[in-house]
Length: 276
Ligand SMILES: [Zn+2]
Ligand SMILES: [Zn+2]
Image (cartoon, rainbow, N blue to C red):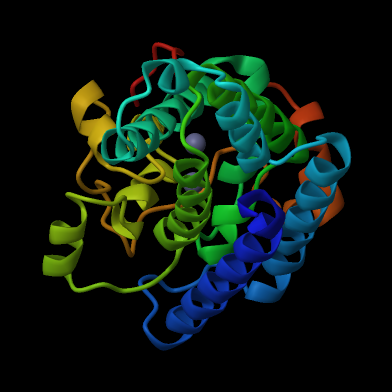
């Protein structure tokens, strides 16, 4: 029942959050746009369509489907432990969020993975569509990792469903170009990654890119010392993107798809021994 309704549930949540945030960006934007939306949105939305089709075609089951199967057959740590649901549902959510944080750090640290992930960072504005702009190979790899995490952890299926919907929504939220009152941002930052917090990660300055890896819960960055409060130049004046791929044509779908295979990894931000 849960896994049958998952695609529809996820799509409705996705479309509603996307429309609400896109509308909010029009009425209360945080930053002035560097580029018209018409240059970026076809590519950003086009890549989501490709990502979704590829995952559906190549993977026989959704993540929630695997969790349902795991519950039936007692696969994974949480199934073996058999703790009560009020413990395992939030604990599994936390564990999956930590896995996503660690995966994000890994996509910055390994040069071949950075080539894939830098397409997300090559967006020269940051708005709600940046939150769903990921290279198809990165999406396939992270989907495989997520299946592995679910198989090993054996989380309750309801926890996985909540996590999937939350991650999708928070990713769009924390990339959105919406102005929140500063006091609200400070308050929200204790429970969720806010747009001002994640925007620091999209700075062209390497030391700022190397911070705020969290997508959903903000605690991992504080715990592992990767938290950075604000961008040095301020949110309005900071430059978004990476040094490579700054031609406007790079925001075209075909150029975005070939970015991992072009140029070198000189803008590789983690582990270069360069803190500039
Ligand atoms: Zn990143
Ligand atoms: Zn991002």
